[in-house]
Structures are given as structure tokens and as C-alpha cells.
Length: 218
Image 1 (cartoon, rainbow, N blue to C red):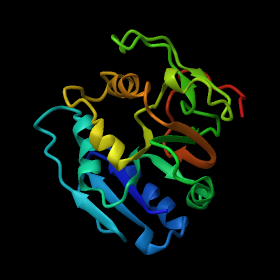
Image 2 (image 1 turned 45 degrees about the vertical axis):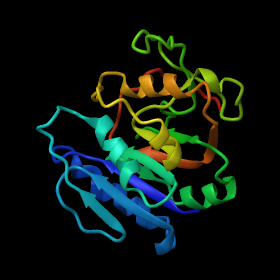
Image 3 (image 1 turned 135 degrees about the vertical axis):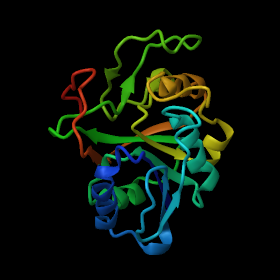
Image 4 (image 1 turned 60 degrees about the vertical axis):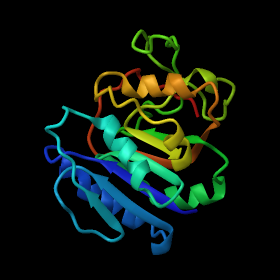
């Protein structure tokens, strides 16, 4: 499988980025099978890495534009778009090779720094016409694919086909903290092919507050 690793960063938050890049290196993906596209932050040199500067003064926290730019510049259709604190477990890539690419959007197991499950495979009962009017997401067992039209993808971590995102772009009128991920999820979830691959695991390099509290669902 060929992958574009799209990393969204900012010069004020990029101190976790070296750890993210090290985790990609540790997966030992063949050099011709992946690329790294970093949007924003300071210039950085790394194997297979392409840095794209971003003018943060245009619009504050304009994360939707950055995510769309990953799709605009990616060479490969399989993309994982992450914030600059998401690390990959060493078997992430080989488990995706086993899982395959029959999906538009895919979720993996997400762990917080404490090893507990973060907001990964979750349902979300927001109304489609008002995605900001929402209650807390609910964790779903990873093997349960019966509620995909009622689910939500957190903005921190997203596996998505380049072709799918180019056809269903993030709404650039939204910025970070304005439920931009919820708006996108509500807009595409009626027709997406959304699947879960829990064997490929990522873990945050900085702690995030649990919301909701994790369950023990496998």
C-alpha cells in the first residue's frame, strides 16, 4: 500500500513533530511506498518529506484549509491526516497491508498517553442540519459496523482516500474549535464507506482530556 502521511502543524506546537517522524521511520515502510507532507510550521528536512509553508496570519487556526491542502498535494490515494502529536505504533503499516484499502474513510485504534482508548470508533447523535448541537460521542465495539451512518471522525486523526476528500472537502469557513470535524462527518456519513481497522494503532505524544471517558469495548 502507498501512503501519504499528512501532518498539520504550527510553529508554536511543532515540538512533538520529531517524535511523530521517528514513529514513521520505525515502521520501515519501503521508501517508494510513502511520502510525508507537512503543512505549516518551520521548514524541516527528513526522508521523503515535503514541507509546505502556511501563512497563519490569513485566518486564525485555519485547519480546514491545511487538511484540504494535504489532498491537493498528495501523490497517493491512501492518506492519513494527523495533528503533530500523533505517533504510529511499529506494526501500523503492516497491519494496514493485511487489512486492505476497501474504504473511503478508515478509523484505527487511538490511544491516549495513558494507554486508554481515545475518541476513535464512536457514534455521534448530532443532527445533520446543526452539527454543533451535539451530545457526547459514544464508544462502539471495533467489530460493530452497524452504525456507520451515525458516526463521527475526530479531527486529530483521519484516514481518507485522496479522491474522496477532493470530492468532499472540509468547509474552509470553519476553523479549529468550531466543530469543523463534526460538520464534515455529518455531511459525508450518509454515503461514505467507513470501516475500522483496530490492529493498526496510533498513540498521542501529548495527553488530551478524555471526552467521553473511555470504555473497555474491543
